[in-house]
Length: 104
Image (cartoon, rainbow, N blue to C red; front, side):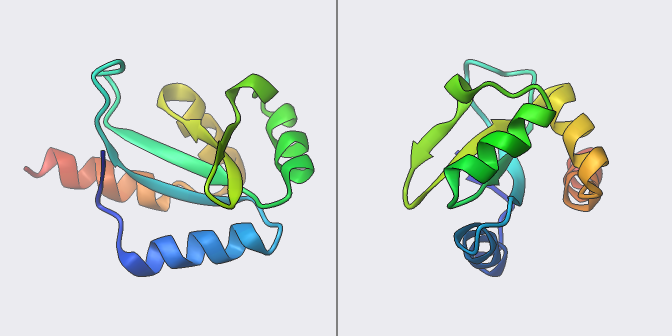
């Protein structure tokens, strides 16, 4: 289940991904298989080859690619999520969610 995503964020994520850019959507998340993780970032791009090349530089395997909706994506969680978002300069949303979770 996804929590903490505004409609406009979702629209922008999809639009950027459909334009062939690697696009990030970070949100609260709960999956009983991974109870220790509270967030996930979906890294998507409509161009599968661009996404795979991008993922390769971060050690992501093709087998981890999700083929969903109109474009593929990687689910980034835990330390991998933090490391990649830092490298991409996209930590703002992750920081916001972590601060929000602490204040509850």
